[in-house]
Image 1 (tube, helix red, strand yellow):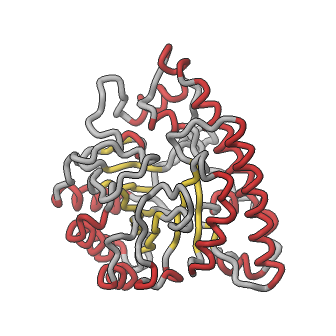
Image 2: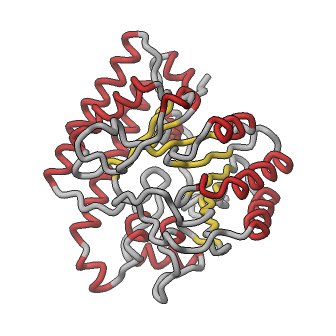
Length: 340
């Protein structure tokens, strides 16, 4: 395979629906009343992916809220385990409100990584999600937390992640709001709080306290260990309409508009023509897709949005790479990331 040849997609992202029991302002899913995927379409697409999946393949279930459709989720998980075995990586992203003990037990028994979308302390002012799950009824040490950072909460990133750690999470990731305009002031707050979070994390390592897994740092860890980066986008998305999309942000738009390219090659050609090329870690194509793939005057009109998004995502990439480089010196860090 030449350096220019894109790798075959190895990640299937599944949207059971766009429906949710929350209405978070930063969510890019815009199909709250849209379809729920039919079970035949779901199992057929998952089965097709498993039969053709390359090395390192994985499947993630998103939404909307996947646990609104527990029978569908269970059917798909059972198919994966029957066809691909117990070690095939599967993850489900949930807001946790419907994650009762029975469902948590099913997911754990089937080796599904359960990622709870939780931005930090729900008692903090301006908590964007409105509601949060009752963590007292869950074994959070077996769960992963995923936090969305908005311009309004950027200054509390370190505080919110520390709260998640104290709550018992031992796997935590965070990412900037893909819909937000990140101006200079917001970027400065994010940079300062990210620096404080780095200090907090290295403090855990140096003090001998158990570190948490940097849930979205594996591409950065690969880079630090000299492994070649991915060539092109490695994800495919199964939408709730049963169609395969080249980007999960397109599936979240609901009914595709006439200007949205659905063919994979056409989509990435259009993205490149607009100045956006796929990058595995904090992909710059994501904001463009979430904005409806604008071109021409529509693209120019959103220049500040795209400039801010590029700056925020670069900040996160550098933060992850820097912390990966520092963390690899510590045996506890290597253990929590399964690095020998």
